[in-house]
Image (cartoon, rainbow, N blue to C red):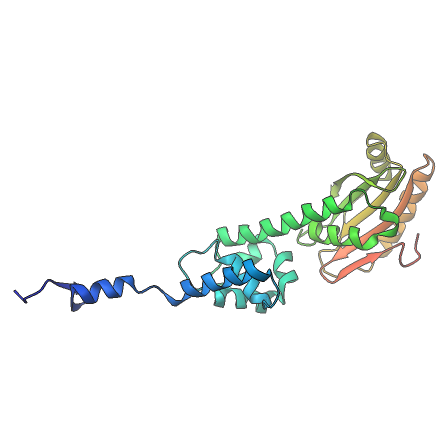
Length: 248
């Protein structure tokens, strides 16, 4: 009728050649994603802005969308990469453009980091490496919305045997019984312990209750020749080491 095949597309009449060209025109963000991946493959994170690292990560969870605005919004809302990793699932999905899958991917990265740091603690003398413990503890505990008390069990060379959370409490309090700590330490044949707990409020200065509890635990385990090497309080602002501050 028109001398060629014509198609109606979005309310406009176009030729078959025009429509094919339109359909084959790829969105700009696809080329941008490819370039990001190639940069990372060549040089790792060198030269990347923080938002670009998050942007690259989100490309694996959000396939058909420009994720740069989402990455920038995450940086803005949480203050940086550490804030994003410390955010919990509910906080992440509140960000426009984020969904359950992309939030889960970020949480997975955080958990992988915690496992990695936990493995790095092994075969290390933790008496001389409080920063290693603090890095692990912050990864493991900072996004938990309630206080959690963790024990790291050590052998005679101050190397890690095992770690576990032995008590979870409320927003600002966790009830820990020295007798339970003794039972767990004996069951793991531990010679030394590093105590760790989080402050969900973010600050990491120990409270009077923290100081009192630490004294009680030190006295309790001393009777069975188990040493307390450190008590570390972690929060989003950093960490506080009893040993580094001469409180042990």
